[in-house]
Amino acid sequence: MHDRLNLAGRVGVVTGGSRGIGAAISTALAAHGMNLIINSHSNPSRLDACAQAITADHGVQVQTYVGDMADPTTSASLAKLAFSAHRRLDLWVNNAGVLIDGLIGMVPAADIEETLGVNVAGVIYGTQQAARLMVRGGGGSIVNLASIIGRFGNAGQLVYGASKAGVIGATLSAAKELAPKNVRVNAVAPGLVQTDLVLQLPAAKFEERLASIGMGRIGAAEDIADCVLFLASDMSRYITGQVIGVDGGMVV
Image (tube, rainbow, N blue to C red; front, top):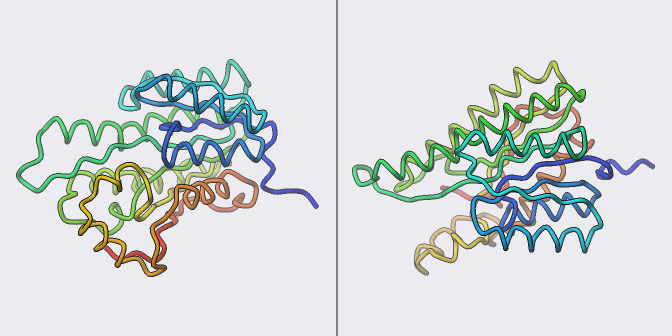
């Protein structure tokens, strides 16, 4: 029987792919044979170490690029890397994002600009670059990382919630436009996930959020990666324009 999770020979871009959820996504894709271009905004040494570990463990080709996704030249450079090295692009994961909390009336303009630049404009820039290559190649899958906050909101996260709601709106619009060209566009909306950001929460706030999860446990980065893997594979070949919550039944 054909293995519909087999990604051998395919090529994917993962933004913010060197740590946390992004690293888990990169690893899951590589484990199923996908060659990768992974991006990070900073820390080239960590990015290179991640790429070297993936290549050593899974034998795929991994290229890296350091750049801010709020800068449109970063997406353009990632697309050029994919085309020059592989002449194809099958998957683009818009994972890079920033989370800056702030109460209404107390959010600096710089925080607004940074959050919307990376979380919304970066997704749009990436989608445009991915779509160009995928349409030329006969199709592909774009996966955007949204958030449960973008679906339901949360006190103290006005800007972050707005940015992730923007990701959802962009996903739905792109899916409609690109479906006739065999390019699927979906979003994954994580809940509370064990990342560096969660470790910064005060103990009382962490327990409060944990208690709101129906399944009684915090999510792992691999839980998100498995959903992205599904959306990258042939198993999701007829799925587009969806926002898939991966939150363990969390209530915000």
